Length: 389
Image 1 (cartoon, rainbow, N blue to C red):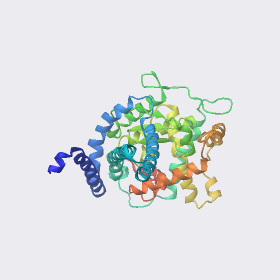
Image 2 (image 1 turned 135 degrees about the vertical axis):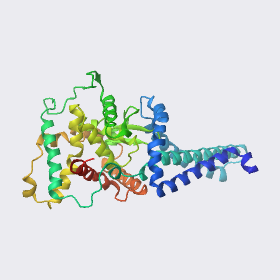
Image 3 (image 1 turned 30 degrees about the horizontal axis):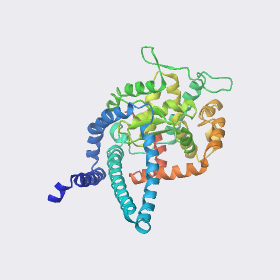
Image 4 (image 1 turned 120 degrees about the horizontal axis):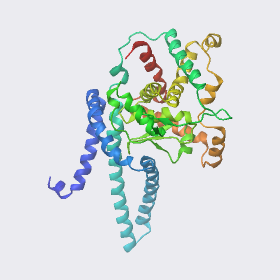
């Protein structure tokens, strides 16, 4: 105890790692603890720390990642300097190098502890709460039939076909965004509208009312395109970020998807579903269309697999209009040409590395099927339409 009193920083450091260990053990063992944390504690971080990072006009989390890359480079240089100090330097030069190496080592150790704690509080615990299906839907014992899947698939296809015809377009057929308006008819931008729509969702799911930080466009959106990523939730800064280069109609659903994460719904299929509900219940035409498009191919692909890739059976159902296929473009050909022409790393390499990282991260957090879990939104849609809330 006397040693601890003489070294208070060491005491704090040990306490941080002990808290990380204890919280992770409890999170993996107790769903009730995680549910309570998500409902009562996590919103506190969003309303405090999230407000602070929200003051910045740029993505704080994005630049934290840049700083992390710089730190890794410095760690490698640190190792090199230790070698130099041990074998080459002499006298005062060696002493200075040793002091610098010691200080940098301590700094890196504190950064690692902080990262572990923040990831535990803003990410890991969220992965171990009750599922949305368990919390909001009646349990179902029997698997869904092909007829039930067909019914929901056709509903979404028909909505997409209908809304596609209502979109304002330029001469090339690209959607033109004409602006958004709140309930009083006042003009608001896309980010403000996303927040208003999510707050409206609070009338159905009480956890969604209250404060949201403003979503932010990513500075490195080109790099996000290479990863085929539309948005990103940063647990380090409690921010919702989106790809500003992708085609416009992807943005409304993406904004709502990333804001869903700030309410403790960390699973991608749940965020996909809740974003869909928020967008399709909106009065905003762009958000409604974006919401339907966001789940279209999850449903259509499952239906195609369910009929055994029997094209004759598939073709008897309502077809997706060519204009809808056009609207689901992720990034325009012109933008791809620019991105691939300016990028330092090939898109194929970036995409493969990103897929591996995301899949591994999900599995480490208990999502056994990794990225495949994204498609579980289909089951949530079936429950929503066929079983009721």
